[in-house]
Image 1 (cartoon, helix red, strand yellow):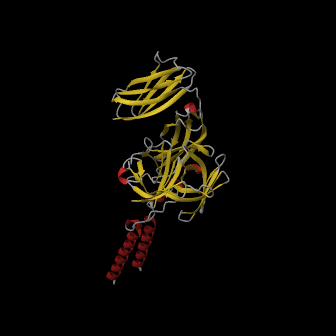
Image 2 (cartoon, chains in turn orange, green):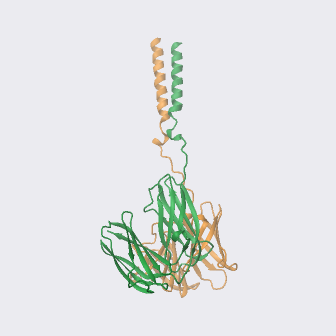
Image 3 (tube, helix red, strand yellow):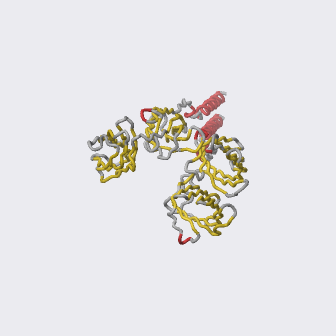
Amino acid sequence: MFKFKTTKLLTTTIMASAILFASCSKNDDTTPVPEPEKPFDITEHFVAGTLTQATGSKYTSVFFIQFLEDNKALMINTSANNLSGTYTMTEDSLIFEVEGGNARTARFAIDENKKITGAYYTAFTSLQYNATGEILTSSEENALAGKSFKGEEFKMGDVSNNPGFIYSFNNTATQYGSGTIADTINNTRMNYTLIGGSAFKAINGSVTELGFLSNKTLTVFKASGLYYYGKYEQQ
Amino acid sequence: MEKSIISFKLFYLFAVLLIFSCSKKDDVMKPIVTPTIVLDEVGANNSKVAYPGQGLHIQATINAPEKIVDVKVQITLATTNYGWDFVNTYTKGYAGLINPDFHEHINIPEDATAGSYTLLVIVTDEAGQKAQHKVDFEIKRDPSLPLINGISLKAIDASMLNLSGTVQASGTIDRIEVEVQSSAWTNKYVYADIDMIGKTSFELNKDIDITGAPEGHYHINVTLYDKAGKTMFYQLHIDLD
């Protein structure tokens, strides 16, 4: 009887010890705990979009909006200087505003995934535009480098200028060239400033070009006396 | 009966051990100390004035109990309009340090629009904590300021630099001071040649002896003084290797 009780006591002690050790093992020793999702930060993104006048001469241009600290934002277009404004972001909207002599408003509807579902743009209180916009993630990597794109270029609106126009980006330098015959394109002809890793602005004399890459499509606006626009598929 | 009591005591002991052994050591609350940053000087002598073509001097005191990751500088127009802007995140010379002094010169382009601008500096530490300080300053155009057109710096060899350009000063030239500065080596040179002083124009072409300067990244701070007391500051950069 004594032996039985001693054995029971020993068993109880061993079981308790096992529980003690098991209970103190860290949960993350074996099961990986997923990293908490990083909250969306608009300063790590930019908007790339197009503007087409709602009336009159309907040519399409490209713009970018970079979101800075302190609710400041910069609109990048063909002007030599960027347009400094402010922005307000809510759960379902993103609004860029400029007051004063160059007043304008760009308003974007956004969904829960931070995708733009609608765009509105007005300038100087009266000029209305049909606008598009995409929120792109800023990156240090150059998504354009080494890539070529081909598509139809339009001139001053709907007039086809080149059915097979090509943009070819240098693989190592922030340079590109364009033309209609792939083998003759000099891809060091234009120097560009990389914007957010997937957009560019280039100025060479009287020529200014802005473009952005999204879903393997390059959208480009060129001001070279006349205005040119096109969407070019990655080759 | 005695064994039952022992058994109960053992369970009690294990229960206590169970509770206390599982408490994490890092549950101890540590006070959260956030970093601070204060802009001590914006512009020469904290004038809060800068000129196109000149460097904007920025000096800030950072108090960061944790090591810092970077310092972000943002300059935008104080109001909304077309104007110059500047955004850069500095890590070199600051990342991994505690309480570093922040000192930079930002080149303001010749075509920068005059007006009121807002300078914002943000320090971020390794714990992800941020602190910021904001100061407004003016970019002014002053055609009477002395300047060095086409200022150029090149390394002739490991011990000699060459500084060149065309000096123009309606108030006539007084002197040129050149500070060659790296984290490991600093030397200052003053040029007040007789053929330069009192002139309104001068072709600058100076060899700067930097014998003993170790390899590294150097800031070359050039300050041109005229007889009217006006100055123009340039910051050039060169890597010695």
